[in-house]
Length: 38
Image (cartoon, rainbow, N blue to C red; front, side, top):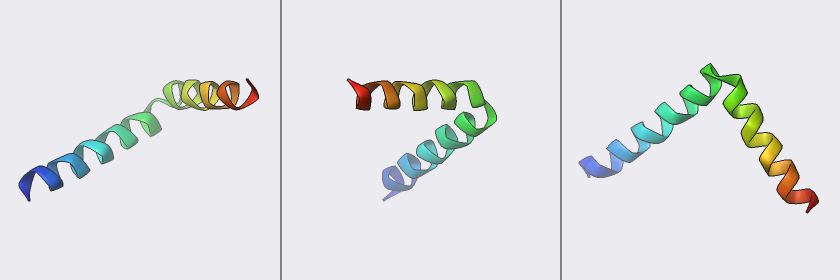
């Protein structure tokens, strides 16, 4: 059970990090769009 909450916390942290660093988010979106176009 603890591991489950820990993984959720980790995912939340990475989401907050991507919000704090728009360049990472933009890169991710760009890669996603590029993947869709190919």
